[in-house]
Image (cartoon, rainbow, N blue to C red):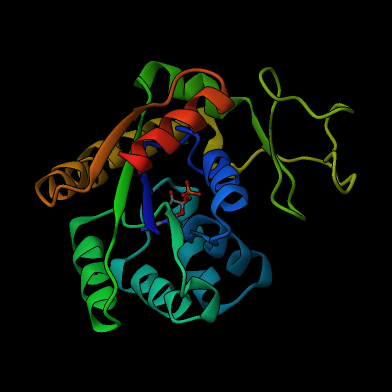
Length: 214
Ligand code: AMP
C-alpha cells in the first residue's frame, strides 16, 4: 500500500505513521526527519535546509523531491510506503506522481488528518523529542516516564527549534497556503480520505484503518 499522510504540523502524522509501520510492515518516509538528520550530520543538504526550517519555511521543492525519489528506489519500499510530510506543494505532488509512474506504481490512498488550528499550537508547544532516536513525547498528553528524558535511551529530550510558538504560526500559514490545496488535488483523483485527528491515538488509528479499508 502506497500511502500519503497529510495534515498540518502537529496533527499526529508521525505518531500514526509509527502505528501504520507496525500494522502493515511498510516504511515511513518523513522528509522532516531526513532533513533534521542531514542538519545533525552537517551535510550540504543540511546546511541549505537549516535556516529555512528554523524559520518555519519550506525547503525548495527540488531538494525534497530528490530525497524522496532516491528513497523510493530503495528495496524496502517495493511493497509500499508511508509518506509523512511529503508532498507539501502541488509541484511536489506532480513530481511524486511522475516518479511513481516511471516505476509503474501509484498512490493508493491519501489520509488527511483534520485538527482545528487552535489545538495545533497547544499540541506542538508541549512536544519534546529525543535528538538521538527520534521518539516523540508531549509534556501533558504523552509524558516520558522520567521527566525530560527519553524512555528508550535516556537521552535528554529537546524542543525542536521550529516547535516554538512564534514559528508554529508561520508553519500553519505555510500549510494553509501551500499544502492544504493538495487536498483538492487528491480529492479529484478520488484518493483523499479525511479523518478526524482529534481523540485518542488509538481511536484515530482505528479511523485511519477504516478509511484505508473503504
Ligand atoms: P516536519 O517534521 O514534517 O514538520 O518538517 C519540518 C520542516 O522540514 C518543515 O517546516 C520544512 O521546513 C521542512 N520540510 C519537511 N518536509 C518538507 C517538504 N516536503 N517540502 C519542503 N519542506 C519540507
